[in-house]
Image (tube, rainbow, N blue to C red; front, side, top):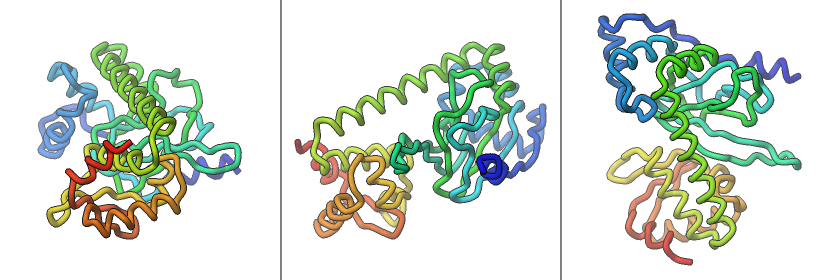
Length: 252
């Protein structure tokens, strides 16, 4: 059964990137990703070499990229869209550990390519990515140590975020916890829609991220919608009054 699942979530390949950056398509792609933090302080020649060693991928909405226990085969850099990273509890309940947006790496970083994934990765919307074979990514990290240092820094930032969220779950009531999470998501994944900032997540996903129940999240969002702070849709939340949402996050 597990093998059938693994075969079912193969990623659509759009084609191997050319080694040269002379054609317009490659130049556009390089312009799109060159400001991503994983490439910080990488020389122009090194940047071109690293990017040209990847392939372009298109991911469908709610497509499984890998599941917990799969062997590590690839490292992805999102160029658009969103991927949620989850684990299953002993009771089978899904917990969202984090969300990855454009410019973020998806995969088990800092672990041997011969190891297995400890989490499941699935898109929440149609997405695109650069994808390296795990052995190729390890090779370019060896060739360009700054790339490895950048990935280590990214891991450190993710650990800090997890620590912050754990502290909030342990010490805060649900309302400030949920508002904190919405503000984080705005900075990470928010997009402008008719003068508001939209977060493309369902109430159930927000409950998983916040460590609370769907009922509690729905009740709070309804209260905040009546106050004009947010507006809800079926699978998204629009933030209409960021100062008011920020004030909620500061209530203990």
